[in-house]
Image 1: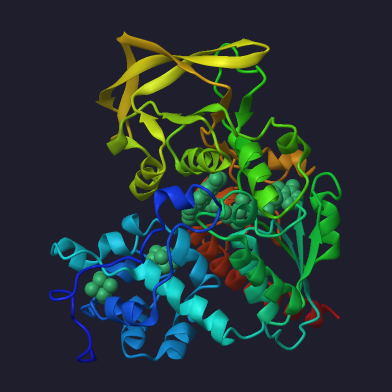
Image 2: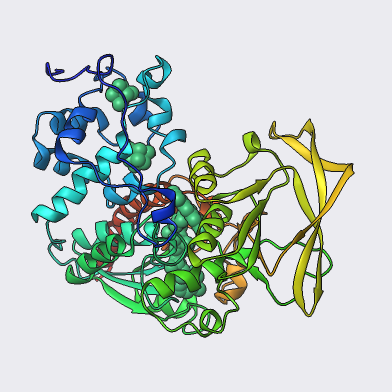
Length: 480
Ligand code: FAD
Ligand code: SF4
Ligand code: SF4
């Protein structure tokens, strides 16, 4: 039942934690928002009207028990709020930071529709679990009674790590393989620190290591072992390798020096935040300092690139996108943050060529306009012949999205079935691929998606794998 503390949304205004000033935050890679102080979190949580049918939870991919943990927070019962929040998510404080809440929980809060401004669900979620870490309430990962079965997880991103955690808790031996030297997937090397500080990711990984999950880092499946070799070693396999083939832009000058891929750029920057030596950054190739930077694309990756360039001390940062602001895929909140930090968006524009004498000098830009809606209902961009102009550029970053790598070829497993988009084909009930005992989850099944969907898939696939492993043990016992 709703307590009397709740339903405060009429008299109490929506208030997010303060953002640091644009000037201050452009000088470092720390998160841009301050954290709630305790009374603010309680007060904001108390704005929730405790809906009978909470649309916030319906639209949260994890179906988090949002109204319940908001009420517990408002009542000062923070440890219980944490336990409830932790029951449905392996990384609540990470989702609280980087979910596009305006499209998920908060965007569907009834208070938003009544014109009072949504409950600040993500910020409260982050506050609850950050407090749990600070207070020592986050329990170690307790492995269940050993089952004698072993699981191999390929890919240490949110999908792989979530499945690894739940399978370990059930007593399986879990081995995680990743080609990077640190676990975390895009949480570690894609998403910049100003959205998600690296310590927040690393403390989650440390907890998994301490819980007995074996990490094999710097291990590229396809190079260091075939999929078949791993199948021989483990009772079941999960493929959670994400999508990494960068989409190309085929215009003249594409191969010029200074025209670079977004993920190379972001990985280099994230590595520098860890204090690593990165030769291609240290010699200036992947460093935007003192340069006129042009980023091409309108998604989350492009937003992360423009804001990284600002922090590296670029002379100017422009983002070219072929549609307009209303039709871009990236979060509007991120565009606003980027604009505050000095990024210039050049809407309805696409590169025609990159002019270079060896090194890129400028981008020739074609103006675009929006034509008729395509099959998905989005208006397609088409050339606007009256509008052409040049933009100076010492660095061009291509951020046009990602497709799956050719896994059957890479893994030496031609029987691994893929869809026409190259994503892994799975049985939607069992989440198993065309190979018995080989499961798949996260972006490699969905295509480029969101962290919270990776966590959801990791949770679901761990249940399916546990079922399959139980049946396997039973049939092996019978046969013995
Ligand atoms: P990943 O996180 O990609 O992890 C896959 C792992 O598999 C990687 O560690 C990789 O090294 C490893 N791997 C791949 N191939 C092999 C191999 N052959 N052998 C061994 N290991 C292998 N989502 C949000 O919700 N909010 C955001 O703000 C956000 N920002 C983003 C910013 C950027 C720049 C990008 C690129 C994506 C962003 N996303 C964001 C999307 C989100 O990061 C992904 O949807 C999510 O990480 C997918 O999780 P995953 O576990 O499926 O794969
Ligand atoms: Fe909202 Fe994401 Fe948290 Fe769900 S996981 S409550 S969508 S911030
Ligand atoms: Fe509370 Fe909004 Fe969720 Fe309703 S939709 S339960 S008001 S957070």
